[in-house]
Length: 479
Image 1 (cartoon, rainbow, N blue to C red):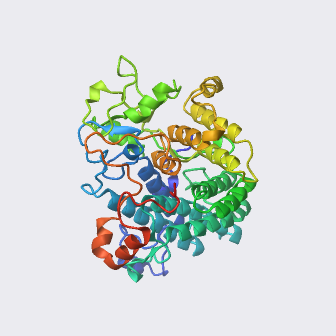
Image 2 (cartoon, rainbow, N blue to C red):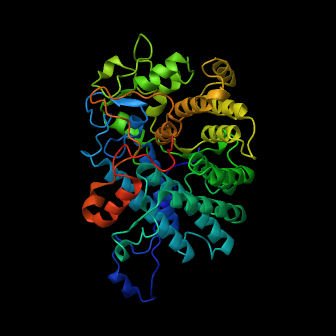
Image 3 (cartoon, rainbow, N blue to C red):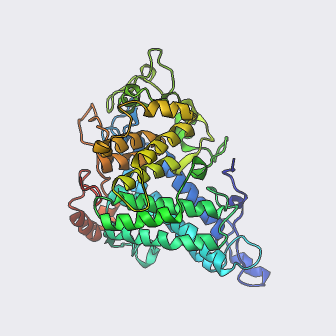
């Protein structure tokens, strides 16, 4: 298994501007002005992986909002109060500052030669590194858009040169990201990228191409209702160029067994010593009804009478309801950015819609379920038995419900995508939180900091999307 701590994390390259040794007296060694692109690439990948995996209610509520987990005592978050802890502001700040800005600086430093490398890079290798950066930026931009809607894009990441950036139209950004990923394919195929500083694939550019094209497929299928023509063209391009074909292709963040490079799940479930979360009745009841073999991996067997999910959005006794499965308590448990099961569900939808490069929706649907079950430790036989059930078998007449329900189940450890699946397919049926009955959010509201510090552009963005509320649907959520 790849190691999460990469040697590059201990190396910050500071380039001297003069041969005069006394010039170093003017340099603060604790705050280097020039950091290698390798270090920035690693740190931004880590920040992205941590944010997407974390269950910390100060950072995100993805596992609540997708109704995989619920709370025991503190009920604001499963009842969709995002303001008290500043959750939108934290999501915004981490993705802009710790991911996108670091990646943008890494891109500049690659072009200027500030890399950990023997000798000068060829143009092909420069292009490959920039393409890797573009892939991670595209993923991050998509997360921001799918969280908020319109966001600063064209005029963002300029620091003091433009501290109050205007917002860009979300659909237009999607189109630009699609073009960026299409362009990345050749660069990833023809050069050597980051290697030791790459905590996803260790520099395997074949897998980076599959990752890029699989992300392109995600973007394409997200807009299948809102822009069918572009969706079909982009999806066909992604499939033809090559997407994930097995679980060995998965884009994962590998963590270590001891701090500080552990999975955020372990930090909040084990290291903290707290008992704040139980599994939600939404997911537990669904898996019980389907006799789903993933129950033994997703859930603990701490309740003697079987798997019992906590009442979503209510105060729940920690000892009375099913806990999170043991695999999630491992500090080295990997974080998922994009996996093969997700890709196969997109292929199933593409085939159902008649896209030229995909065929046989039922086969892709079955492949997706099998990929998820075997990833978690089940067998092909387990998957076949499960799929053979009438309530699981693919129903082409109600394909959105079939794909949406099983896709949502498979995204249990990629909860942000679980929320997106529910918004896209309107399946399965979610519960209203017991304490307030508030509707499930369709987006986060914009950060309070934007309202206070960037009011002109904030007000324009709020008006453009139809109002800054949790029930304002994103542009691709048209049904």
